[in-house]
Amino acid sequence: MNTIDPVRRRLLRAMPAAGLGTLLGANLLADFLRDANAAGNGSYKALVCIRLGGGNDAFNTVLATDPDSWSRYQTARNTGDDPIALLGPGAAAVAADAISPLNGRVVARSTPEFFGGVLPIVPKTRQTVPGSSSSAARTFALHPLLGSLQSLFQAGRLAVVANVGTLVAPVTKSQVLANTAALPRNLYSHNDQSAMWEAGQNPGFPYGWGGQMADFSLAGNGAHSIFTSVSLAGAATFLNGRTANQYQVDRDIGAATIALDGDLAGFATAIQGVAGAANSSNFLATTYGGIVQRSIGAASTLGDALASGAAATIAAPPPMTQPVTGATMSNPLATQLRMVARMIAAAGALGLRRQVFIVNLGGFDQHSLQNSAHPPLLAQVDHGLAYFDRTLASVGGVDMRANVTAFTVSDFGRTFASNGDGCDHGWGGHHFVLGGSVKGGDLYGAFPTLGVDAGSFINPDAVNNGVLIPTVAVDQYAATLAAWFGLDSAALATIFPNLGRFARSNLGFL
Image (cartoon, rainbow, N blue to C red):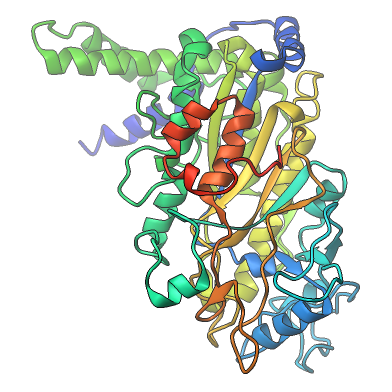
């Protein structure tokens, strides 16, 4: 067994790109992509789920900078031995080993003030503090390492959706405190809340909303519908369909077709021989043989498509600078998004009209490591989404950005106040939606009141240590994406049975 396993692993890694020829020429592929852009309801569309695994700190990602909100932010987050408060808009970055203007400490690269002030954004829709008698408009900003996302927001291709979280029905603070609210099971649990984000229903539900959306798309995807839902994040609840099966792809497949050489070719031939010779009277053997044959056939088909036309010309993402260490690094998120772009480019070769993808960037459960761990992760998000936007701007000479919508999900948000050791598990959080069809440059949903209950200040939007009570349900967020994807109200009701409990099924960002 030990002598076979390494060969088996190499074969399985190579299979998704294995192939011998070209299914569709570059000119025909370009024609398909142009037709897709012009075909209205019949056009190609793809949804790309970007999972920020571990629970992203939304409070340091999208910030309210009006004086009232900023004051409470600084008070709550500039505490403990390792403050996690960022500097305000317009603040300049300070050199390493300089004295911080924030608190007089010596500044190292792993402290928030090293990266300078937050980056202002101006949403198209004016917002005021919820429940406030003041008519003053709120102001907003992004983390200082999200410069590309700031530009995408200003260009109108990026939107922010505020305070999204798992809900089974709308809830209020009084209901939560009185323990009378219908709440999702196992709040603050990574596994359970991640599963609920991806399924749209309580933990344990076996189907994901991405996979169920793929179910409705299989018929229109023809002979190669196996590539309707594609994971670069391993097995994902998000892509579990009732009839659609997720196809898992390795993010590191090269641009050219990988030929099976030596022992791998022999091993593949042997597997095919065994599968093809399965005794038809043995149901298990016949079923297994069919699965193996289909897997090898699908890998070869995909390899052919990826090796031809625009899919073979998608450039690798450039390296990026790790903001804390200053080292040059490759970005695993951008590498995954490159494969997504290649498969989008191969859609013409495969005859696909709809695809759903998931990629993953983990590590967001930082706690005491937030100052050193959160900035590099946000820098990867910024670098990866900017690369994806640039790449989709010219796929075989065609701008595919209007055909593709990418969006973030995460286990949960985090607490507003530090527990003295970073921020803890929360509930609601803010998310990004990117694409040429996105009504960007705006913030959707009411941005919450900030602050922890103290003295006469009682925050209507948060409990405990500044845990946001979501005002936008995952169902609403997902249903808006699904409607753009082409699903009708009946399909939405099937996938999101709780959707009718909320006032709006479409948030309007697409």
